[in-house]
Length: 300
Image (cartoon, rainbow, N blue to C red; front, side):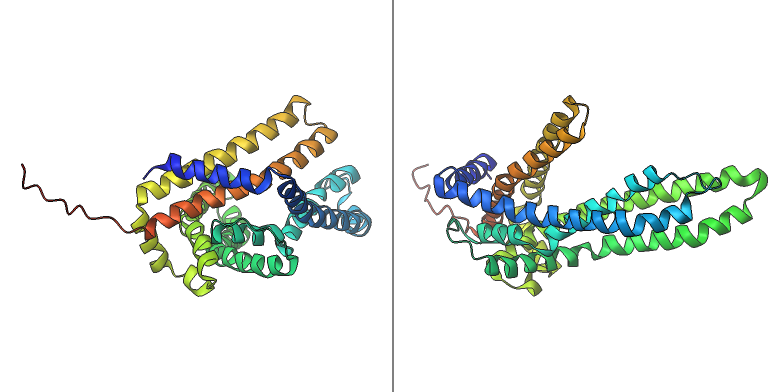
């Protein structure tokens, strides 16, 4: 398999999609479809958390015994605000819908029907949620075991065995992280092809059929497919590291963080198109019929 050819085609598709006047307008529309839900969710969550939840937590936690401060609580509440903002991108999946349209065929989507993109995006969301179930189950199991068994271990291994309790805690955490990573890698292999398969068939049932997805990967070739995933991972990590480093130049000042995050989101729009087209090209190789060599060798 010539990965260079598939990468070149994905680059050409991305250039044809965005590097002209109409494409630049589409780029901006997709960026706004991501940034508006993100900022709206973040702003609403910030107001709710800072003006309603924070006073309650301050009354409970700001005591000499616990050692919390009002500023520390305000800072900690910004993390769930960011998560809620990201969740809003998931709830309004216009960009995901556009990615699905790009994976469907090589025709560049010209008209943006936001109602259509919303419906298609929710199909993508449903597929992501399905493949995320094992990760969520592992998280819940660890949380339950940690909550109920940790206290019991502290009681049983009190005194001179307290150090052993800490070792067990850290070992359990390490095992959990390893299981989550291995599960994530395994599910990612199936979900990526599942996403392309969903864009081609429109069937959620077919895209979560692990046996059918495994058969498609087998026809692609496990080596070529894993190489594709590695290349995609390197590309995404390179972009993330670049923009994180850009903020680091200015010592992660608030203004630098905002600018670098905005630029990161802006450039992730075409990056997502490139990645999905490359993945779709790899998917197509599973359905290319191998030409049989029927040439006769009578002259030899």
